[in-house]
Length: 432
Image 1 (tube, rainbow, N blue to C red):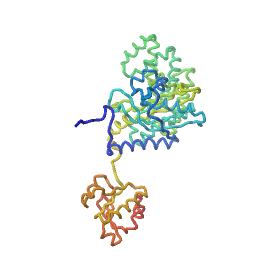
Image 2 (cartoon, one colour):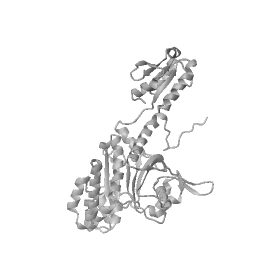
Image 3 (cartoon, rainbow, N blue to C red):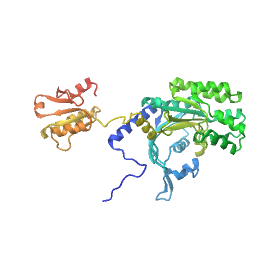
Image 4 (tube, one colour):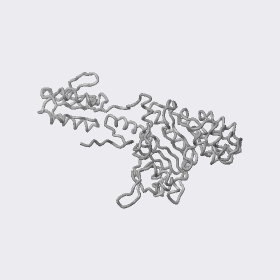
């Protein structure tokens, strides 16, 4: 017999695992709905050219790309932003702001690490059609709210920057090769201070400029305080960019999430992609890789059609967030459970048990019944194994007395109920 296991980086989720994962997804999606995002559903396979347009052939080395039976080049989606850009271009009648979210699978062929898989779920939040600071603040606030709901907000920092802000501050300090500098700034955290300066100078910046870049990109701290520091340090030429960041900080304060946000001028992210705001969520303990990131990408939609549409959003990382929850002993989020198990004492009351099960299900409860012909003890043991909260015991003698028995599994207590009052009783306990 040949034993076949799942591929590396692809994972089986049994019910006891998936119930917690589903709870996490529900938390993310409930937050999206609270902020007025609307759910979309898109293909898991796209034409490979969609990714060539956005990233050239570089990204394709990390994708599952192949030819189908019609000899068409297709790709399992590694990200959803190009798909969304395509959708926006296809529908000129969409009213702005366009606010979309979804959770679905992505695929990337890359090294498997803790919190990074080859098949993974990702949640995307995007706002299209508005360029305002209010839209920037809303996507950050939605992301921060998720971590507050999960109870790990003290373990998460959002490092926020604006590429236009950084560029204007560098220009005001006499640094002309800002694009060159930003490519090196993107890797600053991987270098020593000396290596950083050397790399800048090797790319054509003089010593004074390199030192200014180092000084500016060392500015970091709580967002409101650091904006005040910037206002004092930056000249008039950078005032507009600083004012936008100040407006963002005020909006985040109004949302009640500014305590999670730090302004960090060394965050630049995707130079070919992001155009203004950029942010990344990090583990404050530094034990995990970045949880996820996002920002403003005002030029992307225009790559796929005849109109430019500003956009801002983020992609929520489920895998690294699960690792964070494990670190905080908050995983699993939920156990597999059943509301009511209907236990039939004998075969001659089985049909009556099924009638009760139907009534309970009609009131929105999850209900199981015996499918294997187990005896009383076997059924009770099974009910315990599936974490049934209640067991409704149906016996012939009880029915003749117009009664049934309700067992509370956590306490072990049992109570006799009028056989016609089961639903009313559960309603009185707010169980239904």
